[in-house]
Length: 196
Image (cartoon, rainbow, N blue to C red; front, side, top):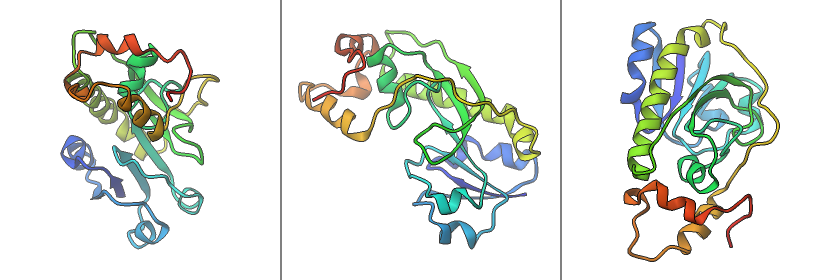
């Protein structure tokens, strides 16, 4: 099977494609119709590329995404950060990409237990590892068209790049978010309000 994977870290899931003898090309660029159609993939996998897929691509190709949050919580960028600030469940989700932001039907999910003494960086690493494992378990079903598909539950939360920028602007300049113990982030709980 010809697979196109938009990801900055091919080493994380490349073995999954080798195990099923798929031909895969990794890119990390905007997924334009031209970039996709010239390669003719049977399926597109997105993992860690922050680009929006336009409807012309979504109408022609099946696109799945590996997202490091337990959807419907923390749709959008920086889900690890927002799960701690908002006090929402932590985990990983594989879902279909639709015209919304991380709002497509869910293929598989896994809750991940993280400790408040960890840093954002160590939490991110653990979430990525959980996403890697979940993808390895699901890839054969996905590629064969046998993966489960269910609508996302109502509710949840979402954030945008601007939310993160406003949050970071509130922090003292000497604080590195990557090294901050995540338990301290609950001091900034937004309670569903936007930062600003």
